[in-house]
Length: 214
Figure (cartoon, rainbow, N blue to C red):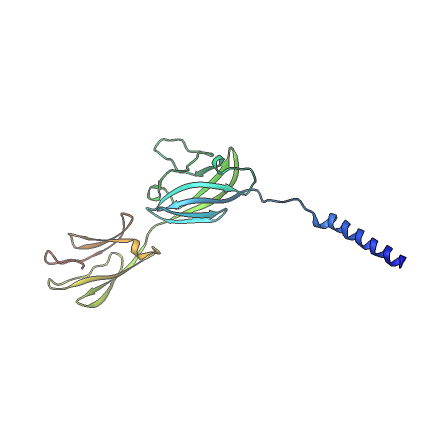
């Protein structure tokens, strides 16, 4: 019985030592950027570090704030710098310029790919990528007297004076078709717009006034 008690005590001590050696660790964190909060056309989204924010030419973006993974780093101390962007012509642009809260029209940006850097003072915390795609018009389906006709970019649809036409659908690279605006011009054309910018057109030579897309 005495030997058994001693053996039990030894096992208990080893178990305690094992806990000290392997079970107790200091909390760890990964330094750098966690995410950037952005408003795109009034809708808020969070872009994780090293990820890509995809937009279309004409979108409005506002960088709200950045958050670090490092304890004690407050979002209010972090600058968000869209590199190559100047808030006003002639304004200073360089590392560390804070573009938070500025309504940026992507239609005014020169280029398609940009780096968005987050800094604390002179120290780079992390970054994301901004990509600006040009809206693309693929084709429109128009019913002429009830029959569907497909017309591509720059195409023409010849009409007779008595034809009845109706725009059925528009195909583009804009994910939400409801965001595509359609404008019938007096010169006999349909123009397709995204946020006020024309990105496609088809011609409809009309032989009398009052005939248009219905």
